[in-house]
Image 1 (cartoon, helix red, strand yellow):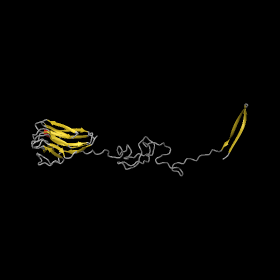
Image 2 (cartoon, rainbow, N blue to C red; image 1 turned 180 degrees about the vertical axis):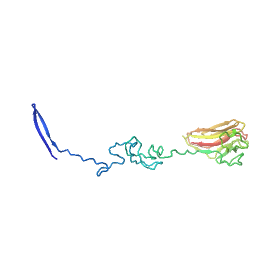
Image 3 (cartoon, rainbow, N blue to C red; image 1 turned 90 degrees about the vertical axis):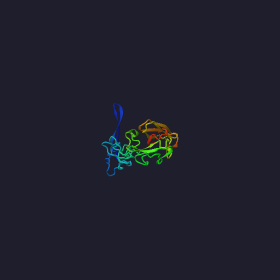
Length: 282
């Protein structure tokens, strides 16, 4: 490398001007930039692209190399988050992956989405009870699987039958065969039916008690429904009333352990309201 400079003082119209000239050989030609893939060229990071600004992969763009785990619905193939063009290494899962917006569901962990409904705290439709005959009463019945007769007596029957066959007794939409409990048995004593086991109710949890009542008699009848400390209500039906579903919602303030009770309040006349389909759900 060489350098030559010539300096001179020149007088122009009485003004001294300094002039410097010469040549500088410091300049040198730069070698051409190595392209990716050529010997000696640095490797690009996975998913990067020479000369392109990072962005989300999308229409017209190349999918980056992702690292997201596969979701339930996918094969685990990594992919890129949908964007508007460009290329970017992605940490979002591909189709069916764990990334939000994938085909694996709202969180990517459940391809089908949703969970099974919680089972009821208590449920009984009485259809499992063993009757003496398939078409008549089992009078003064005490062989319930999930209930005790706490006082008086109750009868169990299948609808329709030869004793209760009026459409008003079971109403439109009822199954052709449904086992029901007559809450006034055949001993001229109003019956009280209670669950065999006490049920536990948690504070701050909302529960729904549901049951069905019908009246096939030519007189008014009533039943008192209770869960100690939580529910106390009386349902009254006039003569020949189709089955009607009743619901009561309650939320305990404190833990409660108590039985569900149905007590006939219609008088000791052997003819009570008919009970069916009892459940308690959260």
